[in-house]
Amino acid sequence: MKFEKRRANTKQEIPTASMPDIVFMLLLFFMVTTTLREVDVHVQFTLPSAKAIEKIENKRLVSYIWVGKSGNIQINDSIVKLKDIEPIMYAKRKALPNVIVSLRIDKNTDMGQVTDIQQELRKASCLRINYSTNVKL
Amino acid sequence: MIKKKKIAEASIPTSSMADIAFLLLLFFLVATTIDVDTGIGLTLPEYVTDIKNVKVPKDRMAAILINENGDVLLDEKPIPIIQIKNQLKPRIISKIDLPNDKKLIVSVKTDRKTNYNVYIQALDQIKQAYFEVRDEYSYSHYGKKYGDLGSDEQTVVKDKVPIIISLAEPESIKK
Image 1 (cartoon, chains in turn red, brown):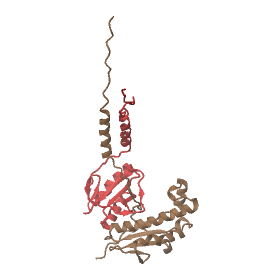
Image 2: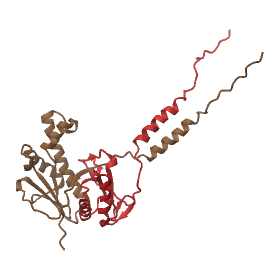
Image 3: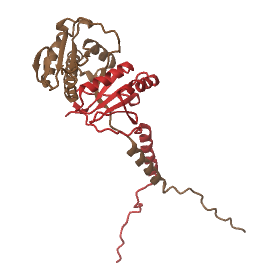
Image 4: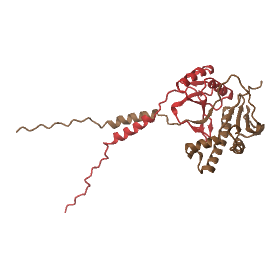
């Protein structure tokens, strides 16, 4: 007697026809949620960490000022001097009235410099600021 | 009879579509910045040229002074930074039911040589004190944490426990 192997008649392949659709869906999600990196950071800094922190709800309102270890101040893509902050930030505020200035300052900076920057921001009437910090666990 | 010629099926090859889509996906994955900006928010006072000194009654003020070595004075008494929260909380709570112009003002004054990190730690403590008072207040009145309240209730709590932090300009260091 001859035994016949029983085999299922179903196909053995994973259907890949819908794979592009899935991938496109993912792609679309990332395209919509992405905000592209706009600037290169030229200064070196380590942020301080804190517990009582808030999230900035709207990323498009945020404008950054970096202060590095060596005391360099960076706005946009360039290192600026202290007295240049006011005109630059004033122009930014004009374009975006409720701008939030996020200060990314190295944790070993002196308060004197921080205050100087804050004074310039006050002159430019950018009053909403945010000290950028890491989350302390 | 003439047999009809079979028309070859016309189709766009779609097997590489997934590869292309993956490539695009990868690009956006790499270019995306997911990190959410976190930090301590503050509102600076407006820039005025003529400075008027307004007398504030002493019991309304909590004056925090940080010197260049990172030592902290709260109302002229030296305390460690991590104690600021516990010292401030009862004072904030005691002023919850007072009208808005009688609530606690926390004034932070630093030296020009004070370390930024110390300043952030102190500010963090102050904020934590306020957040905890807000949480406790909303828990006792609404049975929920502050973050879970509706926006109307949040405004009520915010109005009851406003965060008033005054940044004094630092004294220039003595030479």
